[in-house]
Image (tube, rainbow, N blue to C red; front, top):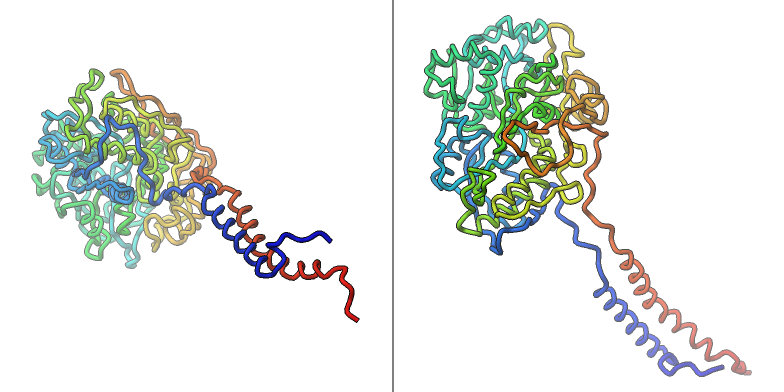
Length: 567
């Protein structure tokens, strides 16, 4: 028998060989290519970088303005912090944010309306641009009960009835118009308490702009009687203390939603961004649209409504078509929100007068705005908004280019996780079915809160109708008033593809609608498959541990083979 190598003649040598092999295997595993790092989940997205004007380190930035976008800003600023950026935002009001921006009192501002429509200063030496950030809607929140004391959470209010309530032309909950809107349900006789923003507010301006378009004659008479403007949006009702017979002014969206939802808010009604109704559990009214359907302000309905919005060349919005749209799936009090930033001087945008003198501010905004365009849209439907359509996400990228004086990045489904690029609105996009499709005349008291059944597993709007299994209103049109299917296929007019921007002087379609929906698609994963080489290296490592142990037993037998057996 051939002589075995010296190293494996003894058990000690075999063990040394085994340990050496194991060490080699461990070292190999340590230097082998590993699976790529897993990006942050959509709940905590990474802020992606976009080309910067010049090399600069991001610095903390501060903004003030719209409370309409306040809940979205909470998420966006928190995600920025997790990505190493410091972005502060105080939700005061759109007029306050614009006025502060005009005198360089903040680095950026939030608003749902432009300077001119709010009647605030148009003298802005630093220049500005409107950067769309999200779509939202004003909910009509209320707190009432029926004659038996059961909470009513399925109240229907037509646009005409809403206009009359908020101009003091309907003052009692048992008014025949409210009864007619609710299939004969007559509420107890109680005065209607209108809760409003006690300080200048862009949400007030948006809501009363809607009323002005619904009943112009009644609005103009009411405004004139109360000394309010008919030429620009009404942003401050505190100057007209008798605009309704019974009212209460509160400062801020949070305070209003909390009050209406509280026991003390019984028999009150107000207006606020839908996300606040969801957050504080306030009931939101079903509102009729020009198509004759009743809808709630969920993302699918917001998106359908903004199909009828028009954007001016500076991206400010004309919402007259939204208020009166005949789209049966549209929620008629919907609007986009904006961030105001500086931008490099350009002949194509008269309001752009120069980028930030501190390059660190521009560096922070560049990264943060790029995040808002894509990752920041993923969860918007869940918290009471609607993600931007692709062409407006692209407008954010165009705005980054204008700010820095550089070419704009082209956003696609391959580099932007905004669900709209994939024909989806994200989780929570569709509400429960209209309960009056199943309820008898005279109504039926319920216990379900606003938003139940919106994303699955809920109890429906009243605790009586259906299960809301995966977001109702999902068959054919995406309307909240029809169907209970599991996936939405909404009709729409808006193009789904991103465009390089809006050009020309005429009004252009915002493309903010639902586009042509496919069955809701999951967001394409950004996680790459793990490298399979790691698995093979682990097998080799274990084998190098096991083989010496086997050899310790087998080698002595090989050495003794052929030797004569002792007598």
